[in-house]
Image 1 (spheres, helix red, strand yellow):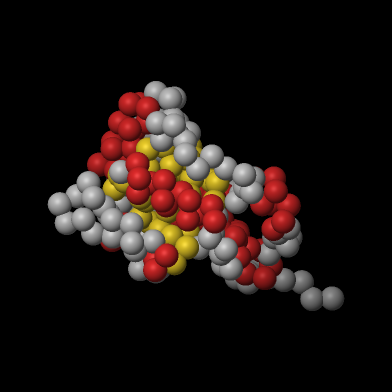
Image 2 (cartoon, rainbow, N blue to C red):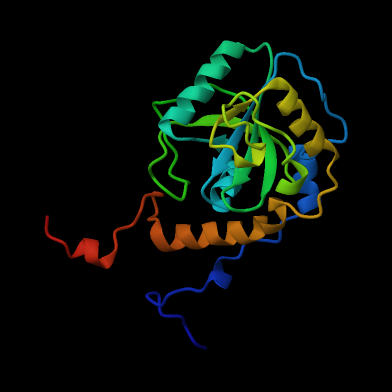
Length: 223
């Protein structure tokens, strides 16, 4: 009987998690509800631009988000101004993807004393909780008619910068489209792929305490 060398690199297949039951996941999380308030009182709407789809998957998994420092301040200010009177909805799009991929609600103010280590980059400081509502791909072509009339250029919403706030009528139109769009694709279809990638990362780069394990070069470096 062959025994595996403990120092031999393991393959991604060895980290495969059990198959994900997508219908159960969607039902348990309440994604893409069949009934939803399309005219919420005192709601505010923001566009979120992500550098990577992987970070959006992390947001789905851990139900958190973090933006740039100016972006966090803008969202935190809006959350405190709403003071629970109405929701703050965030429309997510990955840069250069050609579509928006979902809508989440901001649930807490930004906690500047904490940061998450799950993001693709370690430059994001602060964190806040979110609840994902719609997880479906909506092509930019279906949204390009919505204009940013609160900006000088009045460009389409598809040309938004990160944490760009939408006027109420534009936000309501986005909400309506996300509710009614018969999406054939969504980030959930790649959920298993990102779960496997996360498992490989944990086994390859993290030690038993969950911290980044030093590489051989780091171990041999004299400081």
